[in-house]
Length: 357
Image 1 (cartoon, rainbow, N blue to C red):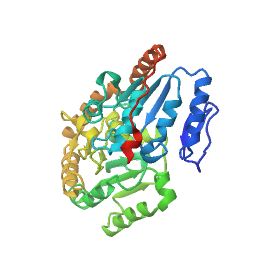
Image 2: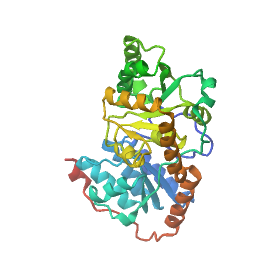
Image 3: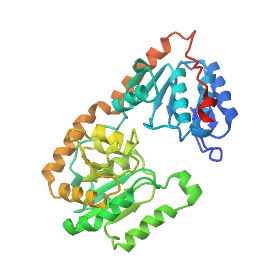
Image 4: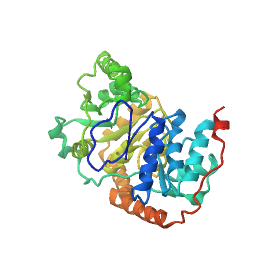
């Protein structure tokens, strides 16, 4: 099943049998009823309030309520300070689901303390990562035109709120100390941003790079890259940075993938980073502080031993996060959900209307 914007149906492989247009409310119950009749044993539902239709993603409840098969709900962003409506929507989704999955212990704790969720109904399964070999960054740099450069990497969909500005502002101080330094911003502009604003945000970043005279030290790779190419960029990086100013983020694939490649990570202290980078597995710096980023970049780029040791600690910690480990854990959760009693599924009585007044 695929969920997509109403005006972007997109090509899908043959195994995608059902589609929900995000902003068409009737699609949600229609597809749920189709799944009830086609022999599905468990529905694995991925939840982030920003991807589902309706106010605060409320249409997800139309889908979940109409299902008559067990739901395993993976919760991608658990807000520590939700609005009343956001809190009630997530509470009801967890009530409807057979099992809910948080990706960190901190996320599971939030479900209990902030949302009032019974901890026994929540499993903790980490964000999955690819298995990448632990290789020296110099191995792949020539393939990317980065031979003899000290490479700092950010990647993902590009748009405001990622904090790239702070790293760009840090680069003059970095290259003064490390003249070979290069900051690579890898990824296409987020489709929603592109549809609304075009490339205004990227153009603004490029203008700031030009104003600071950083044309030889900041590289924009404006495209979506596949799994193999992304692995090459990660392996070529000396440092991966996640400079996100939103400190409530409870997951980050970029951070997880950087750790998977055994790279030193420099990040703002958002919730996910604070948990994963503990015990010397990375470095946390103040949000929106070019000075803090510059200091840490220079220190680690000039200390190969410290940088390598940090990356190895990150790599070792994430071996339990590789896809086959995560997949095996999900398989166990699905098996338990499929055989659980379904005669009296959780159907909440919360008054959502009262929450959104």
